[in-house]
Image: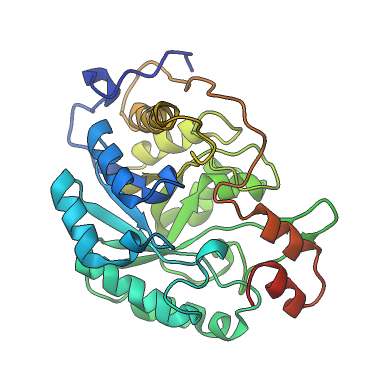
Length: 325
């Protein structure tokens, strides 16, 4: 990799385009601008030249309303290509407490905004009733016309004292019969897995990619690709080599950005990284600028709840520590 500076978004070099039509779209998760809200993500995606957005459904009411999302997509000429169900710790109470109906509602939202993929996490271990029906529910909803349900790889929760299996039926989708999966490279880092090897493990089931880096920390960092220890460049190049078609979604954390300019720089660097390594054939490498030093931190501010849950005893204690009243 070179240490070249990221070209400005206005520069034609900021978005290298292959000689043939791109089959892999690079989109921006609205979570990448947190704590800014979804309208800012649409604006940034349009300004920087992303191919679309993935809407993370959570407490930002904009992400829950199809009419508002369609208006933003039209105003900025940025399509909504995927929707992430409200399955994070921080979104447990969005659309009520029952996770099964929330997944159904996410599929309906995707249809209403024209998105073709719904990303979902496996159930938390205290959601045991939902967990019993999860595989069947995913299989049923995956038959919805025009929508693919892609279950995301997760990781064990770790604290300084112990490790906990926080998901049912498990955090690793390769061990279950989901037809489609999402590969998140930051999650692979936390799980201490090699994302490049996971391409072979997931093989024909890989439908969606969340591009972010990690440093094998116990926290889910969602670093700018190239700033951690995952082989992000090789994963993207291998996707091209295999003729894979799908979306690569930049899902980085900018919550510790101190200025709007710093946040935009990280979004631009991530896009340039993705487009560089999704370009077929020989080309110069690229390493993002080092960015500003921040301590290891969870991307969405869930670290305290996860640490408390990992140190808890019974499932009831785990649920309470994780924020479930």
